[in-house]
Image (cartoon, rainbow, N blue to C red; front, side):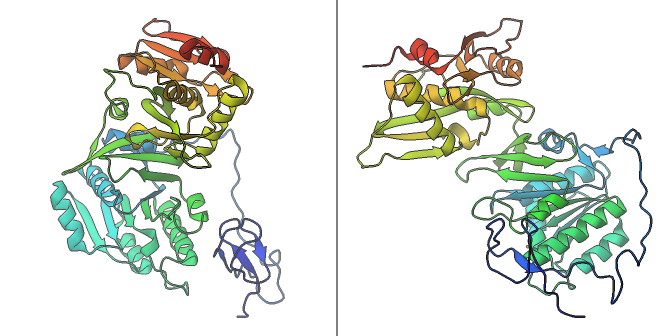
Length: 455
């Protein structure tokens, strides 16, 4: 066979006539590899070598809903969209040591207790190490079949004979396919191994869960096409100094994306957290300057958390802007709006923003809570006790209502909050359990809560 002169980028799919270290189309490094493409043989075209006819159907054809199996671990079932779907492929990534293997071993044992046939394949640890973890978690009696192997051909042969309902591969970067001439963990090996496993899952009706390593940027290592191949992509997040862990869905073909499940790491493994809002809120008996409670939405779940801000004179020529758990670019935007629309400048001031408990928030309706925390820190004036804040801020200084506002306010009321500062147009529950004060723009909010701008 002649050597191919076509090269493709595994990240964006752009094709090149020669190899390069950096893709000109997307700018990714080390993603270009040789691609043999399709071949119809010498002197033949694809049209001459006819394939089989593809069955077509109408959009109106009714299909049975995908069968699901609940693990009875409520936080895991919530993130999966109501349970594990048969013949689905799930990819889970997270930092080293965050607890991915512990979570999957507990989940596999939970499914096994329901009568599912389960197989756990470890490519990183010996079988004795996995058994040691199982004894520590109290799962040594679970009916989980265990294997330690990296040769994908041998693994698929074993699964063909066993025919389990669920198989866990820990991890996809350790799998080795003998038809690909490259080292395990390389782009081509990861792509080919994932393709074989996903195809096997669809063909045999087996649910496959793949563990993926992450890069220093927090993305799953390997080609991005792997995330397109699978049905569900989950990220397991958490700070090493914090006891809780967050399982977040960033893609789910069978349920809502951005759904979260909250766990707490204990000596007996991961325990579910039934009320995440109470976990992410600090002691609210004595209000302190620079703190604002945000009523947010993660997926379909209302979650309250505390934004903490610190503003101090900068000893440096250029003031620092440090953010943990939120978008640094959005913080810069809010500071600019406060300066341009409200006449409140943070020039020459170091600004630090943190979310208590290590939670990461991407909800744009957190803008008003961030502005409130910044103003509270700048004026050294705490917000009134029992107050929650949410609302989206525009560049003009106007405040836009947030979605699912009734769920946010109901959750705040359950946790003892009596007042909410929100944007105009917010839907308020009719039960009157919480008082919602509405503002049309940021200037009106600042003037009413913190007094008119000084100077």
